[in-house]
Structure formats: C-alpha cells, structure tokens
Image 1 (spheres, rainbow, N blue to C red):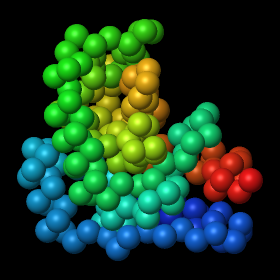
Image 2 (image 1 turned 90 degrees about the vertical axis):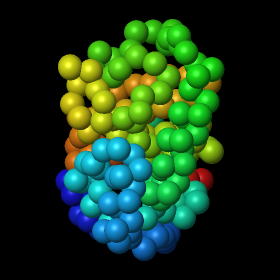
Image 3 (image 1 turned 135 degrees about the vertical axis):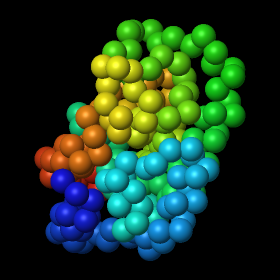
Image 4 (image 1 turned 120 degrees about the vertical axis):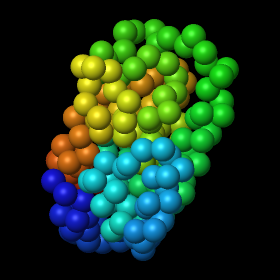
Length: 184
C-alpha cells in the first residue's frame, strides 16, 4: 500500500467517526535531500514519499497502529524524526552492552541504537517509536520496520517494509477504529 492511499483510507475512518485527520503540509524536495545528506543515507522511497505528502501529524493525532497493539502513533515530522534519532544517539553510550531479557529477532542488529535507525512515528514522548531500519542483519531487509518500547527497553520486528506496515496498520485500525481514535 502506498502512503497516499493509506491517508485516503485513514481520512475515511476518521470522518466516519466525526473526527479529523490533521496532517502538516508535505516537504519540498530540497528539505528531503538535505535530510538525506545529514543522515548519510537515502531515505526509503516509500517513507520519503510519505514525508513529501505530509510532514507529520499534529500532536496526538494518531496516524499509525502497530499490529496486535492498541496504542496509536503520531506521524513525526521530518525534523522531529531526525531529532528523535539524534536523541537516541546522544544517550546510547549509557546503554553500551545492553541486552534484552529475551532474544532479539535475528533480523535486527544488537544494541540499543544503530546509526541506520530512523524513527518516523512515536507515542508518549518517544517512549514508543516506530523506526525504519537501514542497517539490518544479513537476515533482515533494508527498510524493515522495527519498534522501540521503553521501560523495559525492547526493540522488536514489525514488518518487512513500509508498504507492508501501512497495510497491516490500516487493517488493525479498521478492526477497532474506536480504540485507535480513543473514542471512549
């Protein structure tokens, strides 16, 4: 699923429940190219297109849902994504030697932070993040989607790529839109 179709379907879910999906105006090509230069790698074309269409969502406007979980995630702006990545990198030295209580999925590199991880969605002040992985293990795939969960810290596998993640996210939202939209 491409992001434009995802947004259209998500707008339908929002409007069906008398809610509004507020997304920021997308990024210009120059902003995307500058971000890639700062990151040191090219963005996955599908995530790049998402940020071209919309530069994130308003705070607490949920755009994504991790399959099999109830918490919705805000879509981070390109600048917020880079800031979240820089924050993880800045605090990562205190997690040298970090290992999770249970074995990590073999598609994801060990450690608390990798330079090839780029958050694109978050909840709760980045205590939960969805991350696109540009440095997977040889068993993984560049562009796979992983999740960071804080306290206890855990990195887990979510989907093989952004398009697959969008399809899974939309299905999870359609399965329980009231929970996603927090209509209690």
